[in-house]
Length: 419
Image (cartoon, rainbow, N blue to C red; front, side, top):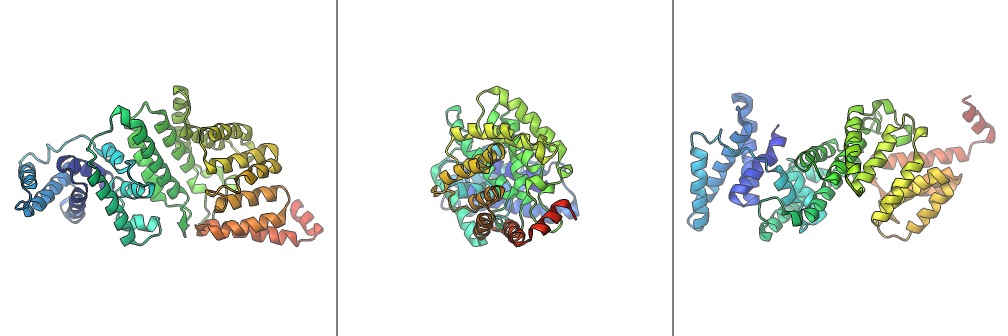
């Protein structure tokens, strides 16, 4: 509950006092007070208003201490003091939810993607600086500095605490969706560390997308991104075994897929697509839907997926889309065609030496019967990923092919017949 209330309270305090950093400190103090007092005293009838009142008081205390230097803060402190001490303050706390405004503020185009993600997780997602630092595998002090710089950038820019105008919304919304997309992807497949998934991050991205979708129901790309998250996250339980080892899509137990999430995602994308020209998130959701609707891996409609990636490729120069396009082409037209498309990407600095590029090449070389080439690229991919489960999986594939390469024809025949 506290995590969900955090952005609502923070938004109210920022809107009142216009000081992002100080407001966040005040809200954190209020959350600490709640964590200390509520277990003994019970949760108040209006927890959001309780937190808001405590945060207002903290802001009033802070501003009183500076009143000798800053008259403006002194006047605001008096206003805050009156609000905090009023007998009806708790019940009269603002009911509007400022989460969406806060989200747009944290994803302002003036910030880098890394700063926007960190600030969004801290201010809107309610994660601690230590949790965010662990997610990005950096020291807590480094992450604290990154978040502090992002706050200062917002403070210096004078961004008003309000939703962007219609004229601005398109550009700002693009940044918001991109940040939430990156947060989800980092949670679904961690870029480093001992775990394949950081469930708390992907869940938080889905929660924030639901809020955004509820507030902007006519935005088809918003619905498309929520659908993509749901359709992808539905496979989460089947992606690893009991030891945390990676299980590829074509080997997953589809009975473990979350059918309720799949149904919700299908309904969202089915409603979004007829609204107009499909955007990239809608098309990616459509790809995820084709995978999720297949009862077995061999039932996957790869020609439809290939057609969707053709459309995506024409929309934007995205190297990851190009990699997925090569896989789809190989599944439809054979591995040689997929490898031809990969050759065109080999000189692309954005992806040519990425672990996923080598992993895809290894897979297609294996499909083509080139064991030596596949082993080489599986090992290259393993050496370039920071994810331990991915590394272990890739090395296991290389070891499997190496073992098969030394088997006698008779042994391979016995294995194929299940003897």
